[in-house]
Length: 106
Image (cartoon, rainbow, N blue to C red):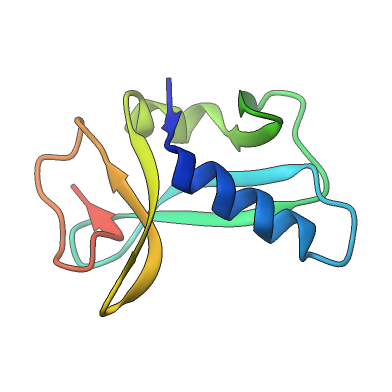
């Protein structure tokens, strides 16, 4: 399953609270593209698909479709802040290669 660090949970919770509209949680998915072949996609969602897999930690819900879960199984999602900016990172044990930005993999 997907793991969320404390930093990721806090970042998602903050995004949900600041959304200004009802939000169910965060969707994480994988699509073809990016410089390494596959790319991570994320976004807040108000509507969920009944077939979604739901990962919940400390009241924060993350929704993943079955096809994306094949690529994300075992991934740890973190939110980091650094000199070059802040953002979500993915530690994906299924990735055999990734680009320097960390947003795409193969």
